[in-house]
Image (tube, rainbow, N blue to C red):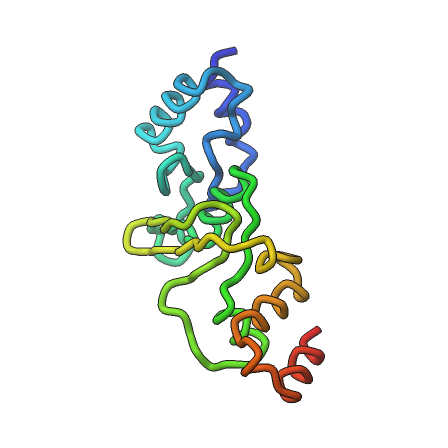
Length: 170
């Protein structure tokens, strides 16, 4: 079975509109043959290239019939998952979600165990900022959300009201 056939068999069962990384198909063949096969599938319209090394099955809106773009956050999650990075919400967003602040982020920003960078998909941008292990404790949980918010607020922001709001959220 060729590399393209084995990749197309696996892609058939993947959900439309969900981004995935080309590295998923490493066992199908060499890196160059896998990416050539993926490139050909993009040219044939079977796949859509969302970002460098990230692909998805095209999804069409049931209302407009146009292609639906990939969610930038899910693209970021696919990239960081493939690299084995830990990702946590930024302190501003954590404080907002817990009701401790009304500030909104202009660009979605996350802490990561990997390097600081920006992931771009057309006009959409997701920022990843390198953070210490201390800020990444319990990443992806409500406890981690509370810890990140507390780090962001600092000693000055720690009041009885803050503590009670965090307790209610947990």
